Length: 341
Ligand code: ADP
Ligand code: MG
Image (cartoon, rainbow, N blue to C red; front, side, top):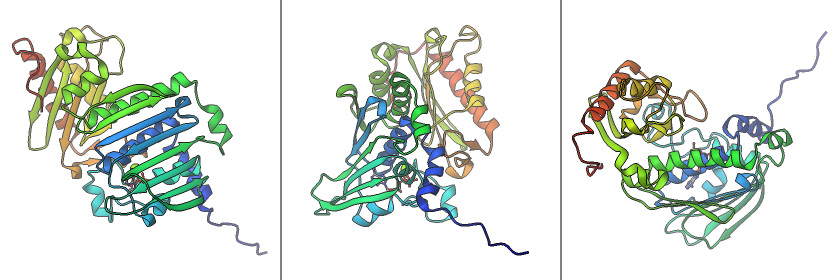
């Protein structure tokens, strides 16, 4: 007995919606993806406008490179990216993005409005797209850079929409993502508004200034500079002095080639370096930047890219521990930070 074949390719809109399940978990995921795109587009100023904790509106306006009319259409296709071309490029990634999934995923589960213009182009492009479907396109006069509005996230995925938490919780996640990217890029100015209230207005400057602008003036005297250079990695950043350690976690930041990562093994390296100087169970503040040849890390193990693998994790551990130990050891003898960057 023969029967008809039953396998068929899914339409793009459904494939995108499925992919969105991984990339877009909540409004904060959208904020993260859009901010990363602005940074990758070499923006100097980035403005974030949020309504109702991102449930009704997330808008990111940048003064970056902008897009051509064709690229403005292409950027919503799945696996469409300007950041890599071949598999070798996967081992030299310097940009935040490279998977070409974010905008396709976001446009599958929201109503999106894009305005973008490149320097030198007379007109820019306006595009409205809803559940992966282009609804409207027009050439328009607009500022250089990119202005993306994401409205009514999960409007077509009720289960996801109902799963969203209270505004205070969703806003906390947005602030976390915003702070991570703002910390990683003190050379870029960022502002954040929620329901017309200014939450952050961060001017471009040095890392110390960014830390103080985000966490408060009291942090200035609490920071100790930290640096260690080896042929494998270099580590640079600030740790909070031991007496500043807190019971609550949340102010510990690792960046690898400017990408925020979570890494419990490396966190342990820092804690070990503080050994004996902080009470058990308390957490020191730190913002540490690890620079490494991209061929020595794999950042492709998870779509949100907050987990990464080093080819020699033990060395990274040892170098971080040495760097922090040195900083903990000398902070008493040196005046507070004047030796930024
Ligand atoms: P990825 O960042 O992984 O390439 P995205 O879906 O986030 O994938 O974006 C797709 C492409 O759209 C990017 O590669 C980039 O060329 C373009 N793009 C997205 N956001 C911006 C922006 N703010 N400014 C300029 N180009 C952008
Ligand atoms: Mg991206």
